[in-house]
Image (cartoon, rainbow, N blue to C red; front, side, top):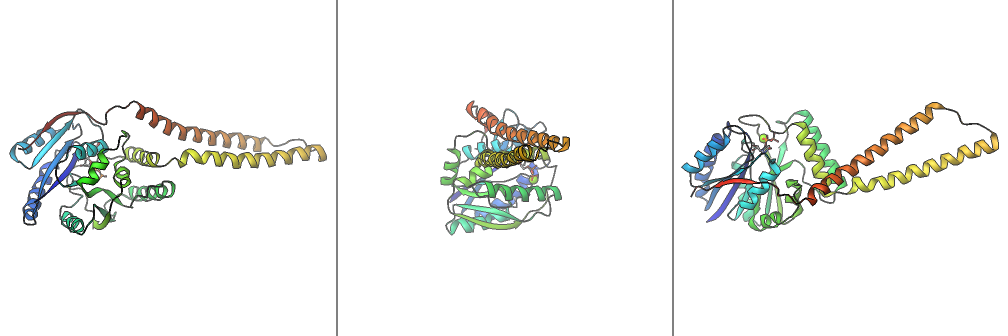
Length: 312
Ligand code: UDP
Ligand code: MG
């Protein structure tokens, strides 16, 4: 019998956990007829509501459920990583607690796994349940990332995926603590199959990701896997220097041979402001990378676990 570990990061999800677990129990019943067994590993990402209490009760009442408790909110990426590090079994599947990742799909994932896949990605065939801005920003993120980075991310694929023990072992052996899980999970490679699904909307509660968090995640994603934003300034700078040189020549020639004196307050101002802006952007990009390098050099842990409870 193969063991599946479902990893579920939760942050202030008091309204969702019981609903999720009921669905899991129904899923488990069908699954057991297929010679697989599943358990759930919840990772409480420092929730401030009744989440911890609910998890404690669930773990006490069910032997196929365990939970990790973070000492504070470390973010979904860290929670996922912790889940992968502590998961036991043959197959690992990260899932959101809000039932946006349907259990039925796991049967299809298993079929793909049995056909030889090490990783089975679930691709959202529609983004109808997302807001317009989220859809557009996601689309731009994937486009930009896939242009800039050597690591190509499958579009519209979230963290919901099946991974074998071997794949997970490779992921958790990665040392960095500035985490972009979607990237790390793809970076390790292996035989990958993609299946499509329609993503339903959140059942209970509200999304935990505002636009600032999403923006930070996108920047994290690009800086984690690409150094192009750093390098591009060399070329950009060279082109501008060349143009400036030619323009300088023109001014000198005009002055020497035609005696035209410099005029134009406007063009001067435009040039100063434009190059001021360009330089600040360049410094900002440097700062993004330097900041990440700085944090990385501290070698702080990715998360702190306050407590771990097992169902058996
Ligand atoms: N989550 C988490 N830590 C956070 C934010 C979110 O563990 O800091 C969990 C959350 O409880 C949920 C999952 O990550 O199980 C996905 O979050 P959400 O549904 O809010 O994201 P969305 O589907 O809106 O992208
Ligand atoms: Mg959600």
